[in-house]
Image 1 (cartoon, helix red, strand yellow):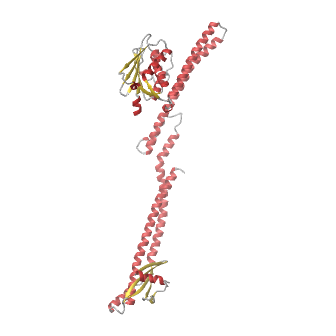
Image 2: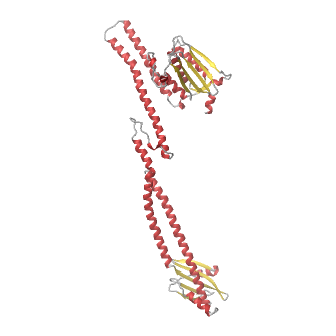
Image 3: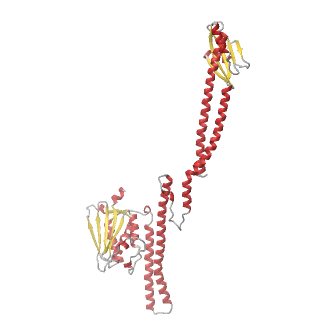
Length: 461
């Protein structure tokens, strides 16, 4: 069932219940008021009958004439009866028969007053003392006028309820359509969004109601999806381009080598060149896999307490294995007495990759025989690792793009690399709730600043 139909039915059901309760309440209290009022009038007729029948010989002629006038003011289909102390019928007037049981008469004697109904007929019995002896006076009538009025009221209430329900259903339908119109507009706009055009946004995001909040949330999700799609397109394009270059070189050189017979040294040179290209492909593939790993949910990556100083020394050792000519100058600032102040929470393998990549970048773009400064600084809440080289540096525009995968500055095109190191390091550090910043000036070197929260700080987050 659609929400619009369910809203209409719920709205109609609630209003129908309220109207029905109102109609029943009006009819019930109107009926009760009519009965009580008419019972009072019948009671007055009972006393008028008693005065007229029993007190005729004990009052003055003037009073008896007044009682006679009151008695003859009869009610519709009236029946009056007078019984003596032995419950023998002394007087009766009226065309119908009440068929009262002796038990009813005895109840009147015992209670003093009894009211009952026989169909539409209302009956009132009272005990009346005459000359010290109890008599029973029975008066009965049918409230023809008010009963017809009550029937008209019932008809009016039922007709009004039915007519009101028709109006309520129609109003409920209109109300449901108006209430869901913003959602229907959101649905129509969402249906226009597809993978080929993620720039569209929902127009219902202005405001503070639930629809606006839903649209704002959806637009934020679209922003993230668009960024992810754009990054994916850039990544696939750049990766394809980077993979194609060594493959093209390998294929071209192998084709040239196979065009005619060559000497063994020439074949050895071709194989050596192809091996170098294959190594480049392997490095590029490993870098791509590491970037995918660094992009995963951090909750799925095993973490442990790590000593930052030990990690840096291990990274320096690994960097020297990869680049034997690298010169590293490791320094410490604000060293604490407690070694726990140097602990961070993270994955040792990933952090080692990040730090080694930063060191390799510094070595790759440094001047020959220039030392690379590696500084560990202990602050109140963070551990700072600064890696500074004395290399060729970058322009401010290139600095803003260093974390874009496969981006390479114009002044390093002739230096081998794939543009993966810093983007990979950034992803790894963000997974560890840290930050990375690059400061560089052209021909004056580059400084990369890595910041990690201390272990005790991680526990308080």
